[in-house]
Image (tube, rainbow, N blue to C red; front, top):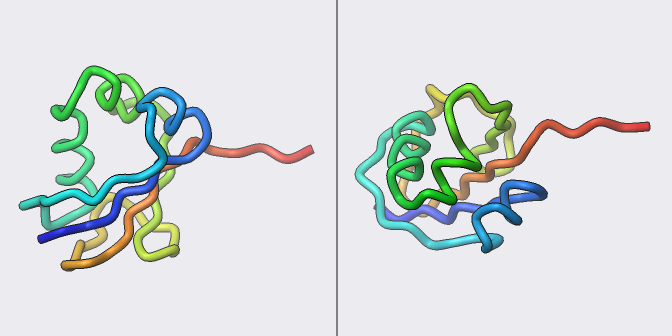
Length: 83
C-alpha cells in the first residue's frame, strides 16, 4: 500500500525532507516505524526506539498499534513544549 509520511521539526531537519510517498507492507504504525528505521542512517537516528517521537494517523494522535490503510497520512514529530 502507499502512505504519505510527514516529518516535522527536528525530525524533518535530521531526515532532510518534510514528506515522502512511501510504498509499504507495514500494517501498523509500529511496523512502519521499523521499516523507516532501516531506510537510512538519518531515519534510524531521528526515529530511534527510546527517543520521544509522537505519531499521528490521518491527523489523529495515535499509538504504535494503530492500523494503516492504503492512502493514509502518517506524521512523526518530537514532543513539543509551550511557554
